[in-house]
Structures are given as C-alpha cells and as structure tokens.
Image (tube, rainbow over all chains, first blue to last red; front, side, top):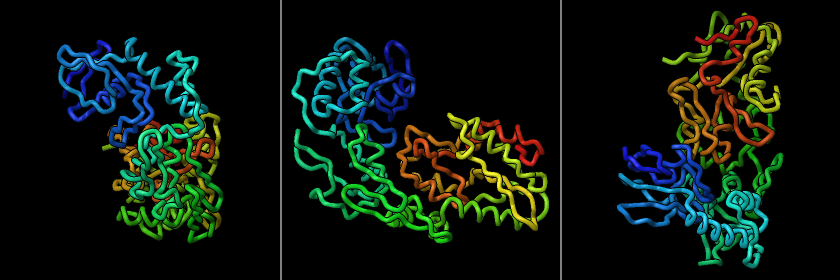
Length: 259
Length: 135
C-alpha cells in the first residue's frame, strides 16, 4: 500500500491505482466523463484535472492517468484547477451545447456564459464506446476515424458494421447519450443496422438479445449452453418449478438446486 | 460458511407475502411486479406454492458471463451483488441465468437480483408460515 495525501487527508492506495481511483475509493468527487471502473484510463475528456505536488513541484494533471506514488500531495479544488476545468468545460459545451450532463457540471463550477461559438456536434470524443466494444464486449465493431477536431467514432467507413452484435453497451455508456439505439419488442436498431432478436425455444417470444450477441457470448464463455440461453426468463422459471415439483418429499435447499 | 435459503414447499400457501416484502424493500415505488422472489401457485395434483429466488450458485453463469465484472460475490453475505457503477447494461447475465432469477426493472431498464438484503432477508422475516427459512 502507498500513502498519499488528498486535500490534506491521508489516503491508503494500492500500488496499481491511479489518483482518480484512490480518490473515488476514499469518497472524494472528481468530475469525469471518460472514466469507467472496468476500462483502462484514457485521459481524453480532461475534466478530472487535479493539482499534484511531487517533491516540491506542483503540476496540473489528469487524475485518471497518473499512478499513485508514495508521498504524493493532491489538491482537488484549487483556484488554478477550477480555472482550467472551466476552460475545458466551456470548450466541451461549445462543441455539444445541448447535453444535460455538461450543463450540470458547468452549474457546479459556476460557469455561466459560454463565449465560444457554439457548434452542432453531439459527441464529446471521449472514446468510451470504442473502448467498451473492443476491450470488454469483444465485438470490436467501432473505431476512431479522422484526426484532431474532426475525429469521429463510428463503424468502419461509417457503414453498418459487420461485427456489431447489437448489445447496446456503447449507447448506454456514452456520457452524452449521442448514440441512437432502439430496443423494440422484436428487433434492435443501432448504427444503421437492424437486428432481429433471438426467440425463446419454448414459447417463441423474442428474447432480450440478438442471435449474434448470444453466439459471441457462447464463444467467449464455456458455461453458456445453447439450451439454457435460448429460453426466456418466464420459461426458465417454469423449468425450475418443474424440477422443484419433481423433488417430492422433505425440505429442499437452494444449495442442491444451484450449480 | 454463509447462510442459505431453505424452502419448505409443503408449508408454502402461495400467499405471495414474500413478493410484496421484496418489492417494499427494494423498489422505490413499491412495485410488486419487479420483486426478486417469485412465489408460484402450482396446479393440482400438487397444490401448493413454491417460492423461487436467486440461488447464489457457486460457479455462477451470471458472474462468468459479465464482461465488466460488475457481478461479484459478497464474501460477508455469500450473495452475488451487482455493482451498478460498473454495469454497462448489456443484460448478458439476464440471458445466462439458467433459472431465470435475474430480472430487468422496467422503470430504468437496469438489472436486479436478490442480494439477501445484506444478510437479513426480509422475505424470510415476513413469511407467515415459515415456508422460507434462512440458516
């Protein structure tokens, strides 16, 4: 364990943690848009700026990318930090004017008038969608295209992606909710692609997932069995009930029923 | 060793008090429709109720299938808890559960599962016939 100081409070942090992770665990609040606990740090939104004092030198850095070090002193809300954060927020709001998340953050920091010319973009270029698809879901359907201010996060060539499985995680994780995702009764629409949901093998009702997503889950996890996955919630409860009914006498513990 | 649920189907009358208790403990607007425990009334010849709730499996499909590790076993209670900060709402656990014991809350589309109420299951406390036990 490593000892660091955050706002004059001594915090015990793991060696592998970043300043942001240690601060969140200790109960501090640092505004951030591109951080997710199960993804690698990216440092693309620049909102988690903190003042870090390492051996007498102070520096403003993004908390999500700096690993903790013994004797580090971190200050969260100095005038300098707030000034820089306001600048970044102003640029983000100028880029995406209608986002409730950004407006809320701006209100917290007391940022009122935006002097920069407002754009019409909807994406803040944080890259969470690409990272979740690649690192966690394993579909790798999205990519970063272009450079600098023109960067976009889309499927290759902006066409309907072949490897997309329609899980909808990118739309959920997007901090400004700019990915269009339609989850209807029998189909899912995302990235200009229409997915039909798989159907229950017992009752024929549409399931929660697309056939492609189930195939991906099956290839990644051995525990997933075709006959168990392709049954809807109601029918699997019914199956459990049948099994329970068949155990005739005496007490039955859930231990016996479980895997 | 952590405690576990024990159900006595011969004692269950199918009154569904457990469902109501669960709804009042876990949901904001007390909706019995999204209770994590379900009591089924079976048809003749075996006329009795059977409550079905998450079994907290030892090698659980939901834990294994979660792409972000949001489902983790709580070592104190032995229950598998959901970390909503990590959850990315892909609903993989919902499909993976072979018993259908994970549900989706229609209000916010998030998943919900039994967490043993942090070690004191309220459904057991309120069961009028002792059909549900926790020991």
